[in-house]
Length: 504
View: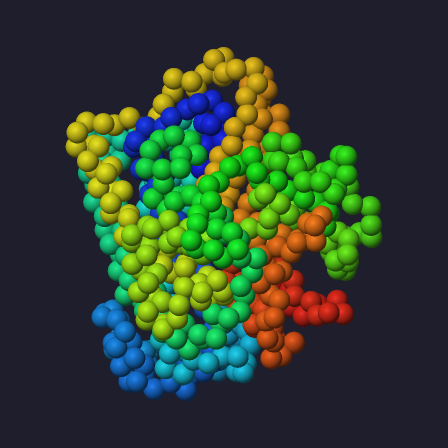
């Protein structure tokens, strides 16, 4: 979340340490966002790349029930339940208006799930719509709204903690969050993870596609102390190079830089050199045909994205990077779950470096994060019990006490991956501000050294059965969880637009 990265940048510049309650509340806001966001991604943004909705009409509800009960004890798994879902889908199809399920490639030869597995997935797709609306109420409670939480302040949080006040976080708030966290964990462990394993078992060949650049970056997530940009995090900080899990390299933010060689921007002094974000520029001075995205000239500038690099290397960010760094760092719970998933699928660790690996890593991270929510709630309740209500460190809040010039950076792991904010402050005002976001890391164009970004590299060698219906390309690109708020276009080699997705 940009809110966290931005306050950490200012806290770093001013040397602010946040109170423990503020740290816990930030972890809870981020944690429930992770759980909700990953479930939404799996079911509503990515599952239909693997699940044929229309095929579910051919399923036997009784056999679907047997399948569901064989992999989970989830309560909604009766024959009548799945028959009801099937009737809903049938009504959509017969109306000629697929609604939620429109604009897809139903019947595509790349789909492999049996009809019963498709019906089970459709049912859980619909369940997840209601579930996610309920669990995210925890973020609304702690952040005042969802999305874009409003309670962040440099130095802590603005939401009060007081068990004796109805206008603050109190015993009732704790009980509410405990209920939400249990609901989150139940769905993840009894629906999401079983579905993920069931779907993945039919697509093991995708452990051989979508490898990408082979370098993985994680800033670390869920701090254990109040220091800005602390390396003491539940999911550890680190870098893996060349798919080598035997060593985790340290992270140094000064080694982050961005190229604009193939971007629709210009740097003063030339575009062949990269710039660290503290010295970054975002200057749109493109002079070619307008608008530039009406064609793709990949030999020159072809994207709005810059090309972030670490030590001049292209880096993948996101759940796979976090889980690989944690796995290679010896994180006990991550190793337990990763090894269990690999064993269930009958594949080795090399399968993690793939499209299938990204899908699995997101589910693994969701489960482990959901398990941590009650732990953090317990920490907050414990502080309240012993009379620790402090929520903000205001000692350096007065701008009159600030140095004439200061600079800081804020590192954060958003659900999509590594997010960094860099700020320069002069005379109490922002002099320069740059963000390097997950979508820019993963979706970056080639740099001055002609290195591809993760999306581009991961698509090399992908088989496509039907160029007019490139579901295989979507599988790999969606496995990164691209930001759908940005324009997304699919074109053929001749520049013909195949599909355009518009977000209103």
